[in-house]
Amino acid sequence: MDQPRTIKAVAFDAFGTLVEVTDERRPYVRIARASTIGVLAASITRPLDLGAFADMCGVRPNLEWNVDLEAELVSIRAFAESRAVLVALRRAGYRIALASNLALPYAAPLEALFADLLDCACLSFEVGAAKPAPAFYRSLCLQLGCTPAEILMVGDSWRSDYEGATRSGLQALHLDRRSVAQAGRGAVTITDLRQLLAILPV
Image 1 (cartoon, rainbow, N blue to C red):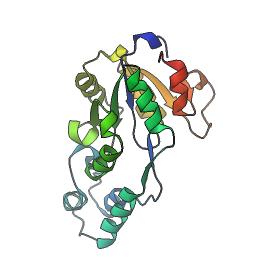
Image 2 (cartoon, rainbow, N blue to C red):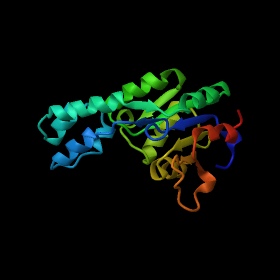
Image 3 (tube, helix red, strand yellow):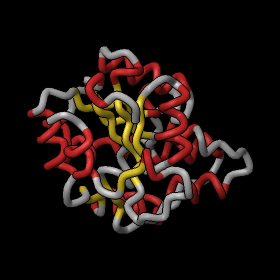
Image 4 (cartoon, rainbow, N blue to C red):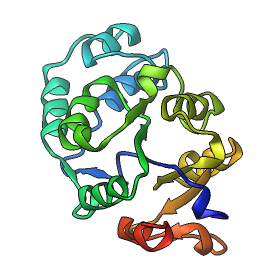
């Protein structure tokens, strides 16, 4: 990250960054695998609930998939430091965004956890594009009202959150909670969101 003082907004990936699914069952993936069409990407780039996605895939409804989805949704938990870091950044005057690839049902639990701390949420199923696509990051910039260079993207996916953001002109940090980052990534990698408070002027 080059110039922390130019940053006006911080955008966070959701899963693996701000929150985790403690009972992972992946019902959308299971439906896509049961289909001969192969349209998993549509689950995060169109506003489809589980039933609508199954219909689009030509897969008969399965009660077990609905049970799996509900189990995942109720198991979503914020990482210990997530809210405290967002609160500190807001108090310091930064605009805060959620910037995530996700399917429609997962938005409500995230809103329940963070809506009071967010200026906007750039969600793939709403904007019709998924990270690392430039169209996703253009939408993020528009929603935040900032130029790309004024936004810091923070996420746990090197390809989607770091490379995708930097290729679109944003600044970025890679979150590696397990400290397994490849050689050469250390300068742009953090292992805990609290490290942001030492990097950014707060």
